Image (cartoon, rainbow, N blue to C red; front, side):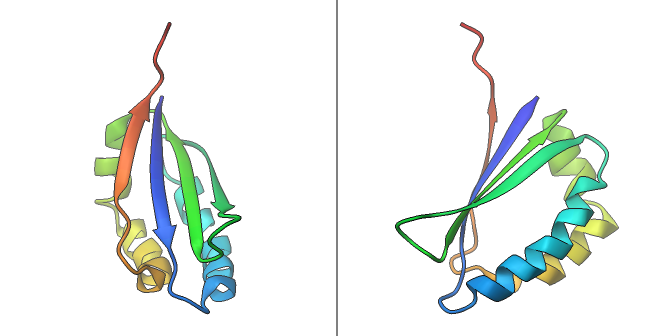
Length: 97
């Protein structure tokens, strides 16, 4: 399992619109092969900052399957105009101790 982590800085004054758009966009990501689950969290200290955590079966399910799909264009149209700066996305795997 791979955890996608993205810090989303939304332009000031647009957090309500962003949350409405994300409510629509989450249907897109949820329908993608390899998607396990996701959550969106809002920062307590910075009201325009969000954390997107998405679990994928494999890295390629996210980077190839989702990002290179036609559905990603719909995701992009719904959400990308809210970000400033554009988010950096990182991927993590569980450390077995």
